[in-house]
Length: 178
Image 1 (cartoon, helix red, strand yellow):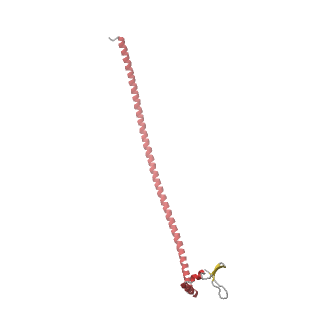
Image 2 (tube, one colour; image 1 turned 180 degrees about the vertical axis):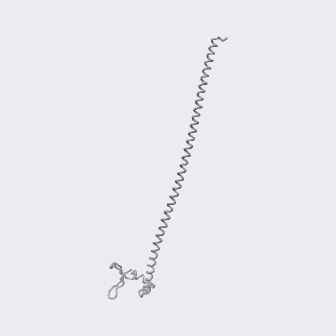
Image 3 (cartoon, rainbow, N blue to C red; image 1 turned 120 degrees about the vertical axis):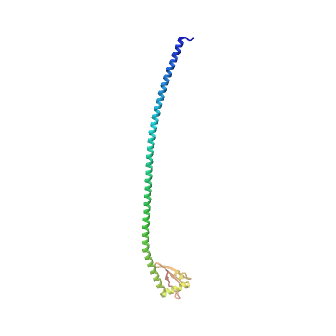
C-alpha cells in the first residue's frame, strides 16, 4: 500500500504541478492578450499608413496631371508663338522682297528698253551697217580680238591697241580694242 507520506508528497507534487500549469496558463493568456493588442495596434497603424499613402499618392497624381496640363499648354503657346513669328517674318520678307523686286524690275526694264533703243538706233547708222556687214562675213570677231595674220597688240593709255600690217610708208595705225 501506499504510504500516507508518499501520498502527501504525490499530492504536493500534483498541487505544485497544478500551480505551475495555472501560472503557465496565466502567462499564456497575458502573451496572447499582448499579442492581440500588438496586432490591433499594427492593424490600426497599417490602416493609417495606407490611408496616408493613398492621400499622398492621390495628391502626387493630381500634381503630376496639373504639371502635364501646364506643360502641354506652355508647349502649345510656344509653338503657336513660333509659328506666328515665322509667318510674320516670311510675310515681311516677302513684302520687302516683292517691293524691292518691283522697284528694281521697273528700273531694269527701263534700262533694257533704253539700251535696246540705243542699240537699234546705232544699228541704223552707217557704222552700224558696216559692223553688221563685217559680222555677217565673220570678220567682226577678227577685228575685235585683233586676230589677223601678223597683227600685234600693245598696252597704251590704259587700253589695248591692235596694230595690223604697216602701210607702204611703214606707218602703222591701230585701234583700241573693246
